[in-house]
Structure formats: C-alpha cells, structure tokens
Length: 619
Picture 1: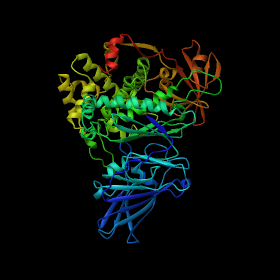
Picture 2: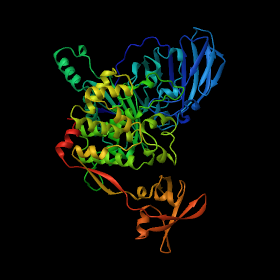
Picture 3: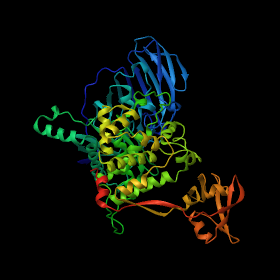
Picture 4: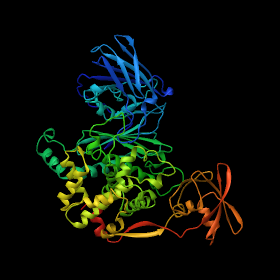
C-alpha cells in the first residue's frame, strides 16, 4: 500500500487505428466549457451523430444534448452543412470515406456523478455527456486524447481507460475497444489527492478531490482495500485460491485471474453537501460530504478522544455498494440491458435484484470485512426495515413495478412519492435478506452461493428472473417461484421479523419519531415546512398538505410558536387534540389535529451470537 500526491506514469498499450477519435481541450476553466474535436475516419455519405440521453446506472432521460453547442462539421478543411433531426441527433451529408471533422462545445456545471463539471478547482466528465456516438462505428475502436488544462501546473488526470501515450500527470491519448467502453470510463482532473493499493494482484487507485487538511488518506485506503478483498473473495473465493496456488507454482502471467478487470479507479469528490455514486466496469465516481471523510488524529486545539465521523460508515457503505456493482449490474445484468439504447428508456423489472441485492450486500460485506461490528450492522439494517415499513407506497406498488417505473417515478420524486411507490433499493435489499435467511434456515445453501451460481450460469453476463429461479431450485432443492411471486410481484409485507428471529436476532420495538407518528416528512430549517403527508396518517386526516409551513400550535387556549416537530410534544402536554396554525399560499389556516397513539419502530439486537454470526460471517 502506498500513497502519493503525484500520479505515476501509466503502463502504455498499443492502440489500433480508431474509427472515431476525440480530442478534449479546456481553453478556459472559468467558462465551464469543454471543447471537443471529433474525427470520424470513414464516414457514410449520410452520417448520423448522436449524443446519449441517459447514462447506464441512472435510469432517467437526462437529455445531455441540452449542454451541447456550436456544432460544426468539415471535410478537407471546408465546412459542410449539418441537419438536426431531433433533440440529440444530427445528420451530415458528406463525401463517403473522407475523414469527417466535427467540433462542438459542452457546458459542464453539474456537480453530480452523472454528467460533467468544470471550474478552476476540478474537471470531471462522463463520455455520455461529451462524446457523440457514430452508430455504425459503435463496435469499433475509439481513441480519446485529453489535453493538459491551460493555465494549470498541478492538475492530474485519472480514468479507467487504457493509456496509449500519456504524460506523468495522466494527460494524453487513451484507447477503448468500442463506444460502450469509452463512455463507461469517467475522467477526473484536478489537483487531487491520490493513493493506491493492490488486491490479489489487481492495482487499485483512489483519488479524492476537495479533501480538507484533516483527511486521513491512509485509513481510507486501508478500509477500501479490506472491502475490495472481501468482495473479491465473495465472488471468486475458490477460484482465487486456485489462482494463488497456480501463480506460486508457475509464471504469474500463465495463471488466468478470475477477476474480470485488470485495474480499478475510485474517483471521489468531497463537497460541502452531497452524496451519491455511479458504477462503471473498472471504476466508480463518488460524491460525499467533506465532513464525512476519515480524519487524522487531532494534534492541535484541545485534546479529545479521536473518533471518526458517523458519516464515514455511510461513505464506506457507498464504496462497498459501487464496487459490488462491478459484478452485479455491470457484467451480470438484466437481459433487457444486454445492449444499451442510449436514445430512450431501457425497461427492466429486475432493479430490485441488481440494486436491491447490491444494497443487501453493501453493509453486510462491511461487517465481513470487519469495518463495522454486529451492533453497527444491525443498526443499519434496522434503518432499512423502518424505511420500508414507514412507506405507505409499499402497499400500492410491487418492487418489480418499482423497477420498471424507475424512469418516471424513482428519479422524479415529489410530495406523493412515499404514498405511491416503494424503493427497489430498500425493499429489494430486504428481499435479498429474506431469500438468504430462508435458504440458510432450510439448510441446503445460502444467497452467497446463489450469486456465484448465477455468475457461472450466465457467464458473468445478461440474466433473467428465470435464471435466478433456476439457480435457486438447483441449489435450494425446491422451487422459489411462489416466494418471489409474494415478495417481488405483490405488495404483501415481507417476513423479515420471523426470519431474523430464526437466526439469533432479537426484533425489539421502540417509540417512533414524531414525524412518523404524525405521518409527516418535514424540513426544519428557518421554520417547520411540510414536505410530504403520508397516506392514512393523523396529519392527512387533519388536512395538512405538502408545502404548508407549520407556524404554531394551540393547546388549552394558549398558542405556541413552532420551530421543530419536537416542540409539539413540549406544548401539547396530555392533550389528545390540538389546533395547528399553518400558512398555505400566504393564507393562515387552523387545522384540528388529533394526536395518534404512539407507533413503534424496529430496533435489532443480537439474541443468539452463535446463530447470528453464522449468517453475518457468511458461514
């Protein structure tokens, strides 16, 4: 394991002639514009150019073409006409076989992991935002030349693309065997921190943009390495053992590694307020709150007991989640997404498996990697259980429907989302939990073996629900069709408490938070604002609506100013009804609120350590 503030020179590989070549330049970081010079080596006489409307892994049409401008085409140095056919498609009439030169600009000021960003501190882009597609050449080699950023001396570059000829900072020429690979390798640029480690001979790099002086890079590398090792063992345990045995007895290059990638890059942007990640075949782009990074022990100010921020566990869970996707969705993936159509929605009912099961394993593998203990894991699991149970939409929408509707519902949440939908992340993770605990209780296999069985059956490629059912029957010794019909394709509640009890986990109940008891989701910042009103709750019956500002509560004739929901418990006393004063569209309204009987949330604890550890350890 080693860290450095400078990137090392990447190993170069020979690049075949490319069908499509891109050169990316940044003339002025303050303009937030990337300029792209694109060359199509052998265009058709009527050449189509397209920019994707979405990026795999994020199921929403994001219309990246809205940021493309100044598109021009030339042949032999002469400008030729371009016709725009639709929002993201252009047609060029040109001379077939003569190289077509295309130039354009892309505005980059979206700080998410899905698009592109450029300012004086950092540059980042996904190929789906910058690289026009030539449909006829999509399966042919592509090259990407990234110029050093003008006016900078300390900027570096990190990407999962294969380097051809690059400088010591990483700028230069990269190669991809096809368009899909090109746009599946995001690029991070800037004066970032960089560290590296190896796991089973596979080099990993971790770059962090925006890290504060207190950042403990060594700890992040050590924890990430432990996660990567646990996940490699999860997917390739016996094969890895054989690989290590073969490598020690003969030339390492002669022993084929079971790991499906040759290198991996983590790209993390630390910001004031943000969270998210997007998976790629040999890299991931991440965002976290700067305050959630691991911190060096304090050496100044008053001495304190050093403790990592709680948000750091969340960050490790994100790292675990996106790394697990390297297998589960980037390779083993829905058959409907075997070939991406970048122009339109690509529907599948299987996101409960690919996102949900990944969400089941992300925290569980933190526990197996010894980054968290049993109590911390069960606390995270309790949170997931409560999130699902506190969502009225779970009784309206199945998790299979939730997967299919991701394009119009999950990524377009509004005030009614909790009442009409269920998350394929959270409920999907509980489906994974139920399958795992059921298989373990029946004594023939477990979900770990099922996942590896699917990897083998589908050759690490496209799969269907029928494949899952086949592996379940083969390893579990019976049909699980009825189980999936109930848990995945219906809106019935999952048997989570009973299964946990069978595996040494005590399911405790404790008073719920005030918001959940009232059936509200609120924002407490400069006042008390209603964001969502949950179906069937006391707040809905009283007449609250999303957008209301709750100003005051009156009990026993005395009005009290409200700033937070906890104020209600302070001022209500023993009253069973109160009058709420709310502002709606600048009009004051009085609502009669009947205070409900206390509801309860789940809190898990270990009852039988031996039984619980057999599951948690993956035994």
